[in-house]
Image (cartoon, rainbow over all chains, first blue to last red; front, side, top):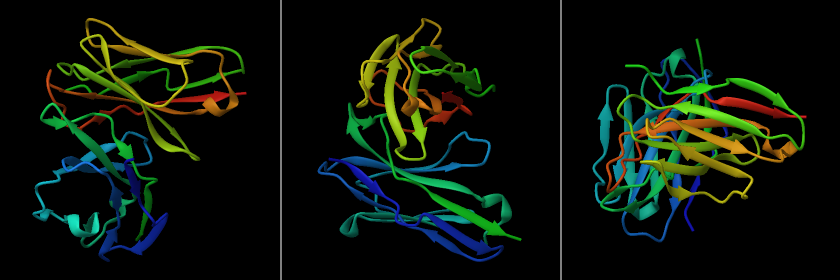
Length: 118
Length: 116
């Protein structure tokens, strides 16, 4: 069965600190997709990144970076120099591969509430 | 480009009633997925529709149903409401191709259902 674990329920940091959100996943599939979504107080989830199981290259996008390690089944997310606007719930998610792509049936972790204090 | 629109945003029902929630996807998106979010169970997949056909279904009882219209708009219905159905129901659209999907979902702000 597929499962996503986000052990950190809440994290509080002061603005400009770096913060890493952990994500560990379980799947028996050899091909799968991993995601990070952000849910601000308004409620709508916002897509941040997708990574497939064959691409372990780490990625950096501005202040965001992602570290994917198949050996430890982890897909961690780091925010550098955090800002108050980064305050939100962050979800890690997993989907199986089908028909040559990801499915839209995502298995979400329980989320990590990030509070960035000014 | 208009985002995903869900109506109503808030509603209160009593046990035993039924409810219909509506979702208008982003123009050009043909896939609509529904998710339930509760404090206890988190985000759970309900179902996905593409070209008016249900393509995927989560592990929910038959009281939960949905449909998609030819203009890609979607509705979900919950019959015989129970207290545990109180949740934020999120709709997401995707420019899913006929073959695979992308998993990149564009979510609405949700419909918050309270069952008394």
